[in-house]
Amino acid sequence: MKKLIIINGPNLNLLGKREPNIYGSLSFTEFLEKVRAKYSNISIDHFQSNIEGEIIDKLQEVGFSYDGIILNAAAYTHTSVGIGDAVKAIESPVIEVHISNTFSREDFRHQSFISPNAKGVIIGFGLESYELGIQSLMHD
Ligand code: DQA
Image (cartoon, rainbow, N blue to C red; front, side, top):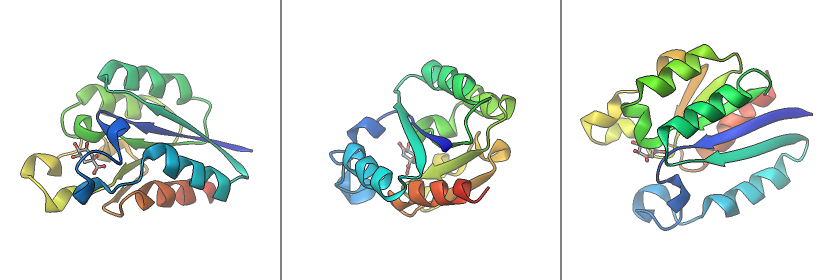
């Protein structure tokens, strides 16, 4: 069975409550339940942290054994050389995802330290961005 993990960065624990006009009103737990049921032939772990170093630790922990990582580093996308370096250091393919279209928002969201080292980038499809990430890794 393929083993994937979704890693979510800061404030994504508030999905459903946080700026629902941008991020929607579904909680990540509800979304994950649906996705796990739909893709029952693959294992989909989930990790969320508001702490940069914990995200780096998790990338290092899973990055040499998992079949793929779906990473929404949230605000750290635009600031973290450390997370960018971790993505470069590991072997598992990383798909960078964003719920909102970061390019239609403030200029500071146009920069990503993840993209140069990601296998691919999926931006702006709401929570479906995660599902598209899963699909892309399933066919690897
Ligand atoms: C986000 C976009 C980031 O700019 C923002 O800081 C987030 C969420 C997204 O999924 O749209 O927290 O990564």
